[in-house]
Image (cartoon, rainbow, N blue to C red; front, side, top):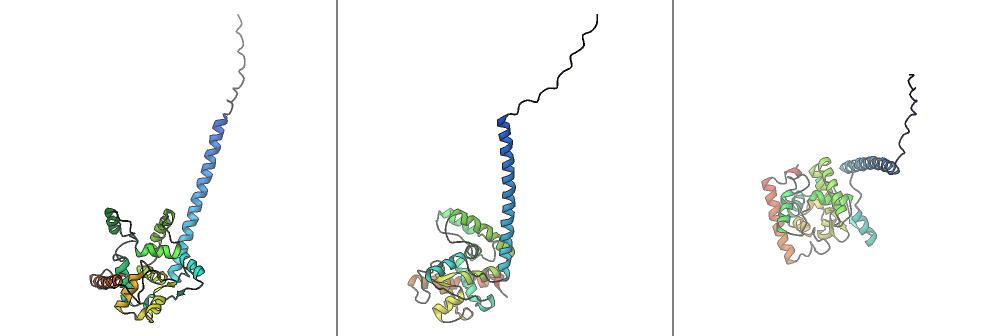
Length: 251
């Protein structure tokens, strides 16, 4: 009996493409594309930020967002850049004593001070001079989280790319000391009629004492509170000069 010839099999048809699977694949491709552009964008932002910070290591910043805002509001401001060697050392020590006693010891964030503030449940800030410099030079004033996040990033950059003396030099030339008065040179002339190189220890301490509230405090006509604060800053400046906490700005 002859065998029956096996019927040739037809090639199997591919299963119909599932529309849902296709949509998922398309979404995954789109997400990979978006992720690639995000990484690329963040890289560009980081590169621009590094170049920006390095540039200000060499040249004086022309002014921050807040200074320009005050210029537009007031029509004029007082500001004159001076290098660190034309600022009295006692002025630098007074600002460190008033605003950031551990300036020479930390890497941009005073963790011990931050822990104290958290433990006390206080709402006061614990911003270092480095953080304040980052804000004054590169950012806007405010308390929103986006600015604080950017401030942290710029703080790390300036701590890594600028020496401590440069950070303090820029801070002293950007800080507000009265309405429309920015920088220690303009402040010394505005309040006392002398340059930043010639301020006395008392004058330096008074200037440092107005920094937390420059529009509400007057270094030339101090209140009782400001006089007490001045005496405290003078003691602090002398202390950090003795114990070495100002060594990073010496010489």
